[in-house]
Structures are given as structure tokens and as C-alpha cells.
Length: 136
Length: 48
Length: 456
Image (cartoon, rainbow over all chains, first blue to last red; front, side, top):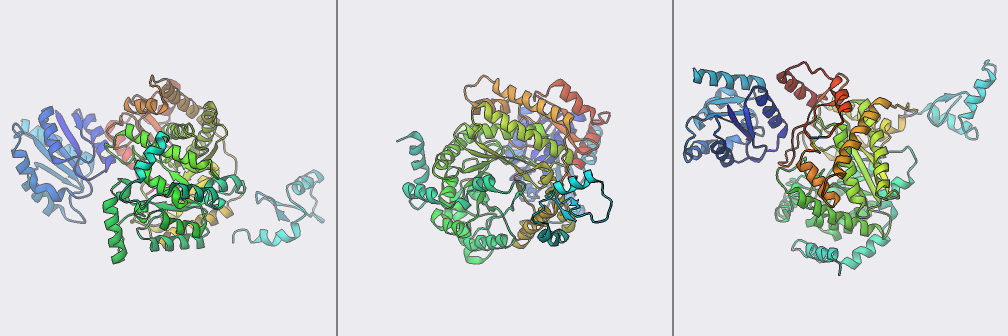
């Protein structure tokens, strides 16, 4: 399974990014890590280029909120991305918010899996369960 | 009694306390004995 | 006219500089008070007295002046001048606009002092008024204009370097360009050093402040030192930050001091003064202000054990945001007090750890010198590119990120995966033997998360 990952936007939180990379590899994924400060277009370009199965975007400063509604439109411009599993995790709002509001909002933006302030391993367990269910 | 440069407490006058000669010399050798009288006041207030 | 002078005239002929008077600036440096030179204080301070330097920069002249007044009242030894992030990215137009907004509205719109916009004529008034050494703290890959303005203002200590100001802060600023821009800085500092006391250069040892092993910290300090000394700089400070284990800090300090002297002599620069600077804990701070103060206090004790020449302080508000001038000044006073009552420190030497670390440092340095490139900066560039030098948690695309480090039971940082870094086999076996490696990667990741937040 191929995963493209990275931290979106004007965000230099590198520590979580490295740990996601490490954990994904430990679980047997092939990882293409775009690092911090990555633009949405770069994520989709990389998914096409690598033939990725999963796109895992992380955001820690909460700015994901700002571009969330652009995701669907942008993704539609690319061919062959219909089966891509879209996942986002981290700290998804500026300030405080509760998961009941945030999760449905990001699902509407086009994400299959939304992990707001969930610890890394729980998040990756969710991803693996989702993949298993889809393949069965 | 007074303090040396590293703030260890040293005996500069043993009066009637039976400090062995060698130990007494060692203690005094660590101190600048020319300033003892003025420095004792300072040494008591060392943490202030 | 020399090539350097030609380049200087291009750099200083800038719409944000109000006519740079080369002759007047040289005359000013030549006749400047010795008290402004930290190199002079390093030379003449009482042997065991560590210089205390806080952090801090505000956008307006007025607020910066007020901050300095607080620091002087708290018995500061070295004043900081921290530069705002727009200036660090050479975006003088934005810093100019934000400075005006800050002046007009009494709200700080910048996270530091926009030195280029204030200019040297204005800033010099403040620096000479306080007549204390000032240290320039920035994080700029292309600091040519900034450094010219700083020295012209009377700031005679310049922090940074091509590696330490790039790998922790930037994703894709070209590293080769950073080396060339810093070469300019070294030369300008070296030239001014001939006029009066030397300008002191200081490297930024903390790097990412996240599980960086001592051998990587040390070789980067040594390489930036050599790059600086080979251009003629005569006073240099190597630095590192508290890393979580008192013993490892003491070992790091001892090896760093010995190796700095050794390698300076190797390039016939043994006459340069080398100083040791210690940063109080640079990782994640506790939000509880009282705990933060305890942490700061412990840092000061370790700095004394390490035998640092200067300590750079944190504040009790570290976890909360940009600290107020009151909190900043309080830290200075507290640190001075701790230093004053710390007496009769024991002399701790761990020969086994020192030997292992020395072997690691020498092996990596040898690999750098053996690179086939013709100049030192190109050798270093190649070694970062091919992972011989690998900085944990650097966001930069050139960094390899193959090395993995964790803490052992005593909180020493240990290398459990060396990647391309030429750690000798014996040392590698020793490092790994200190750790529990039977765990799976998931629990190691959990350990790393815990190890990063160790002080919280």
C-alpha cells in the first residue's frame, strides 16, 4: 500500500510528520513523505505520480479549515484519483471545537477519515480497519 | 570560622577545640587570612 | 576595489538603507567603547563568572529601549536584540509596514526588532546609551544587509551560521546559497575585528532542540567554527542546549571544548578565542509557571557544572507566548542569584562517555574532511546532502532523516539507527546497548513522543 503524507500549508510542525512517517513504515506502508509546508496541489500531484492508495494530510496549526472547501473541486480536476482514500488528522480548528461538529464538516469536504486530536496509533488503526473493510 | 573561595567552611581559629595540627594547617591554607575579620559578616549572609 | 567591497556596495545600496557611510562606520567601530565588545568581556571576566543573556526583541524603538532598562536593572551582562521574522526572510517592505502599524497603534505587529528598517543611525543611539555588549539573534539565511546594519549600530556579537540557521527553520532555502551568504558575513566580521576588539561570532547549537544527539550537535558546532575561523574571525562561541541528562551535558561540554581547541589548532587558528555558551532548556516547556522556574533554575546549575562562559535564559512564560519584559527581567535576576550562590561545585568527569563521544566526533569529522570537494563549505554541503550529517527533526528537504534517536533510562539521548552517519561500530553498539531495543516500532514511537515532552 502506498501512502502520500505531509503537513499542509504554512505549517512547520515537523515532529509529528516524522513520527507519522516512521509509524506508517512500521506498519508496512510504502511512504512518500512531502514534509512540512506542502500545498494541496503538491499532494494531489504526488498521488498521481506515485499511484498512491492513501493520502494522509496532517495539520497542526488549525489552518486546514481555511482551504477545506477547495479540496473537492481541486481533486475533481485530476483523473484516476477516484479510489484514493483521503484522510486528515491533527488539530483541525483554530482555538477549540468539538469533534461532533468538526468530523462531519471535514467529511463533507471530501475526507473519508477525519481524526481531530486523536493519538497517532489510534488514527492509524482506524486507517487499517478502513482499508480492510473496503477490501473485503 | 570563615569560608574559602569555593565557599567551603574552614576553621581559621580553633581555640580550645582539639583539631589535629595537620588538619588545622590544611584548613587555614585554603583561606586568605588577611581579610578574615571583614569577610565573616559576608560569609554568614552568603545566600542573600 | 576588492570583490567583497563591490558586493558590500551592492548590498548596502538598497532602498531600505539611508546612505551607508562606510568610512564613518569604520571610524565608529575603531573608536567604540570596549564595553560593547563581548569578546572583551570574555577575556576580562572573573574566571568563573558566567555572563547572563536573556532573549527579547520588540518592534518599536521605544519598547526595545524600555526592555533594555528592565534588563539593566536586573543586572544583565549581555543584551539581546532579536529580529522579527519578516526581516529574517529579507522582506523589508512588510516589516516596514508592520513597524508603522506598531508605532501608531501601540499593538506589537512584529515578533522582533526590524533592525534594517530602524537603520544604524537610530539603533546606535540606543546601543551606545546602554554601553553593554549586544548579541544579535535572528535566524536569517541571507543576513548580509542585517549584519552590516548590526555592526554599524554597535552590535558586536553575531549569532548564527549557514547550517544552524537553516536546517531547523527552513524547508527549501538552498543550502549552498546559505554557505556563500554566510561567507560574506564571516569576512565582514573578520575585517571589522582588525579595527578594535574582535567581533564575536556564535553558532546556534540547539538546532531543532528535539532529540539531537551530542555528536551531531558537536560536529556542526565545529564545522561552523572552522568556516568562520578560516575567513579570519578571531573570537567564536560554540554552543549547545540542555538535553535532558545532566551527565550527558557535562560530557558534551567537555568534549566540545577539547575538540574546538583541537580543530582550531589543526587549521592554524589556535590564536582565536573559543567560548562555550549554554542554552537553558529549548524544548517544550511546562505551562505551569512555577515548574518553568524550577526548570530554568536546574538549567543554570547544569550550565555551571558544564563550565559555560555564557548562559542564554528562558522565562517562566515560555509555554504561553512571547514573554513580557517583566518576566524576561525576572529570569535575569533569578539566574544571577542562582549563579551567585552556586559554590564549590564538584568536578564530574565520565571518561567512558567522553571517549565514546570523542570517537564519534572524530569519525564524522574525518568523513567530512575526506569528501572529494575542494573547499570546506562544499565538503560540508555534500555531507549534509548524502546524510553523513543528519539532523533529527529538521524540516529541510536536503536533510536525510534516517537517523533515529531515543532516550535511555537515564534520559541520555542515544542513537538507535545511524542511517548514513559514520558512527564507529563500537560506539554504535555502546549506544544501542543502553536502550531497550526489544520493543516494536509502535512503542518506540510512543517513547519518542514521551521523550520529546520530557520536561512538561
